[in-house]
Image (cartoon, rainbow over all chains, first blue to last red; front, side, top):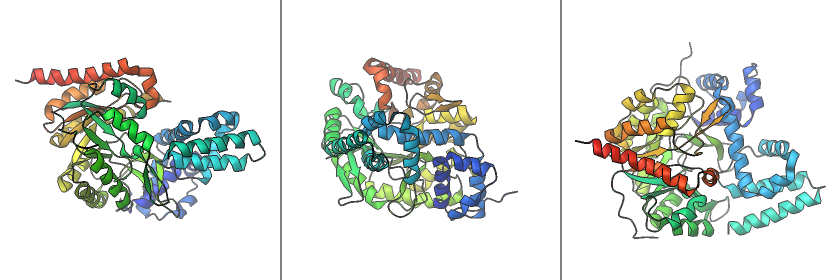
Length: 144
Length: 299
């Protein structure tokens, strides 16, 4: 039987947030790969808590809500880029979120980072990079 | 924006502000008694200096919508439930906004939104993270709530959240946790009946038992909303009309909550276009009817 000891909270929340950001990590955890937890400062009780939560069905909806919330920020602020990406949208936002794991309450911060990411990734696509420049200019004027 | 507030009579009907509602609120200044605003939507935060800058366009639109209607703050940035120290800079910014709008109170979710994420300022988790309901967490939260209350010099309300995963090994129920937090800090409860219903649907919570455990004398505000299915999960999407179950819970709580001042309807701006001003008015009328029904049932 697990004995639930006091937890430090931030390590617990950080590892839970990591799971929610990455459905692949949930699958790894469920299949018995727990090495990723070594990155976090977790007590044995915290570790057990995370493992139990990784197995709960509700993790799927947490992942969906995370992606939906972050995507909504981009749709709201840089819709022209979202439209221009077309079929490339899913892989682009997934890769963007992988290198920018922390979401931001401030849509502008998130959108400006996304503009830079898209510009760098699609440097060979002048039409798309032009859209990102216009979007960033529009963002700056909106928030000034 | 000063000198407008007399405070609402008890209980009034309000709405959580977003920019999509502005035109309707300006055209219909009597539509609601109180406006709840997420103060973080009125400024931009960056790593630069100054850390916070008002977004003039957003501020102007909000102030035009107010028309001397009393305000309450519904914050999302203190992340009181998190394991990080209270962000005093953010608290000071909320206090500065309070100087400007004189809110009747400040509320936040009982949840964690900010987590450590490498160097730099903490990251937002993207979704609210459920709080471990144990004494250790309570010990960490009490001083944060007390500090926020002292700095803001107004009542602080903690809101029950919609959760989709549960932290195992809890020592008390959420209602008991909120009661103890209120007892130890003098804070109050924002009871979100749609969140409670969401947990009832998804996690088989017993809403009647929850309300029986909760110290309803601490409830100052109630949130109601509509939701939507995401796969086989019911979500707190703020997507339209309140379900009948929420109104039934409202009918139970209103007469039993003597400190209740406000019932607030939440509607996500992307769904306002579908509901429209007449649909919004209909929802607000349903809330007023619930209040009137309770009043007429009193001896």
